Length: 146
Image 1: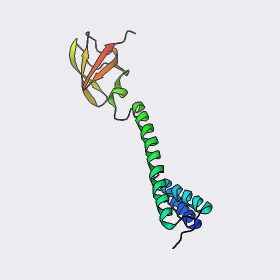
Image 2 (image 1 turned 90 degrees about the vertical axis):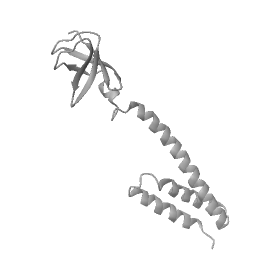
Image 3 (image 1 turned 45 degrees about the vertical axis):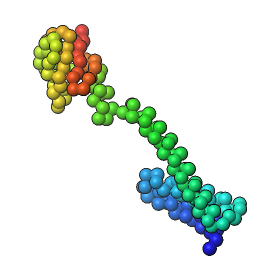
């Protein structure tokens, strides 16, 4: 059975329509590959085997190119993301102390979490501090002169 170009166009548009229903990009490249094969079959009429091989090759190529593009984009956006990244959320944060901080290691409550806090100086109750660094579960703090 010889497949005609309209077979490929129908397959491509059905896959694209299914993509609209929310498959998150999985069917987009398969649909576009089917449309590409439909265009080729319109120009030349290869055998059915060649058509299926073309479709498989186009599916692989488009999917790999898209994956590589998206993977690079995701890597770049991870550096800017603060969700579940305490260092980006805490460093630079300014707070007022609810307890006295002595020089050295102390406990400091930030939000709903208690942290080990390290200071190079004694800091009084109510003083404004800034978090300068986070290493593991230790926050480094410094008094802000007002």
